[in-house]
Image 1 (tube, helix red, strand yellow):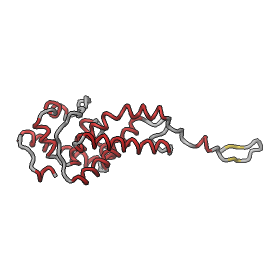
Image 2: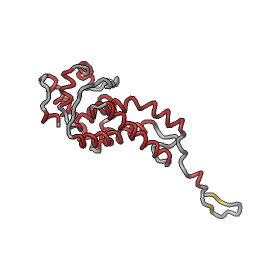
Image 3: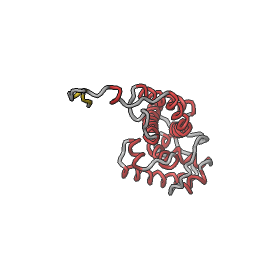
Image 4: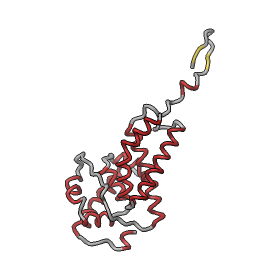
Length: 201
């Protein structure tokens, strides 16, 4: 609050209280930083590159609308980690909605899978076999939620807390889901058996 020359309280001018808007240049740079990882996540979640690209575009459109409305985290000065987490949260929900509409999940390609180089405790096993047909078949047998948690934690290197924020679960629940997903992935991989239609649902 400002004071007039006579010491009378005055309201702070609106342009000084409003957060600074994100410029188009800033937004474009943000898109460039995250579009590849976001498309890879969606591609591996919905197993359809064209649909993944559409979902990614929808996610960025949501982000641009938020930026135009000067809504966090798409404002000047926001941390890039906050924007990244927001993007993956929206993309996750869009991907899950698409899978529910489809009612049949099929994985045929993991070409866009960009494995994390952070050296997580899971990396040594999955990184060695991520390109094999057995891994594709094994991933196909995980539920969409388990697969999303696995991709977010191992591939995108989000923490368990961040994964929980994205998928709407507690960190403990995420940790349990990840542990279960890893065990099932290993078992399915070692079995070398193609998934049945029922298991794909």
